[in-house]
Length: 409
Image (cartoon, rainbow, N blue to C red; front, side):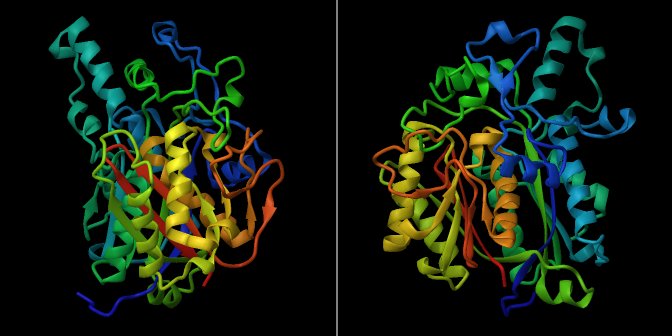
């Protein structure tokens, strides 16, 4: 193992989201302020109290034979990974030095529930023999690992809505300290089904604003009343700086630091004062040798829940101090909905692009900023920003807090 820490770079991006089937269309949708939320038309929709969600804009482009052996989470992870790998220039790497870190908050819940219906209605002999590999939470990571021949390790963090971000943080550490030279890292989630919707609705976590679905997700707004469930996947190709430079790779940015903490407060509610989340932000800055003044942009977790958005605002003030007001903040869930375990990975993609292009997408539906949220949240028009570090936050049920710190060089 290499004991001298190495710098970690981003060389590839991949995504499939409610805004588009790839990174380019997703980024265009964010800059255009387009919403991926719509009214569902599935035959089960009248059995649940919430009728809106943010499904994929484009179905995974896989052949029937390949797709039938994979849960939707696995399909999306594979699609995003293939795009990221191509975007990185299909790196040549020793398979023993290639790692996969792909997280999912729930795993193959669609397979689990649909195959249970098959069992009840048609009997055990009709259950697919692929059911266990399709439903297991490490299924997406395993699928990607097999597709790319990753023999350096396959990891699958499960930390609710912070899963994808924690997977990227884990990959960062593995490369930084010499366990791998290249990593395919990110998150995926597909849970648009009556049971998760009913469960989140019973928790009062989902928005009840259904007259116009595109207006439902409104992070930081006074009238926010809950999140909108979405699905998708986001993947980054990370490399040791010397490995990327040796092969002449295009470097999109540096993953300078990562911080992981826990609230130890409540299984579903955030710590009200934001102290746990603040520790993750502070650790990301410290490991990246950054100061609060270096932060030009924050892609907030901001799900559009009353308690969560306020707690994050307090966390940023605790972590950044007087510099909190000068960081340009956006909340892209206002357009994508909340992708659960994939959210942070998709947002990491958006954060790298915002930092690289020095433009921050405006937060949709922010008509009136909550009086208690003292942040410079971009609204109405996209904002040009100065060169500097960019943070991507993710927080999950169970008190999981993760922050990634990217820098342009």
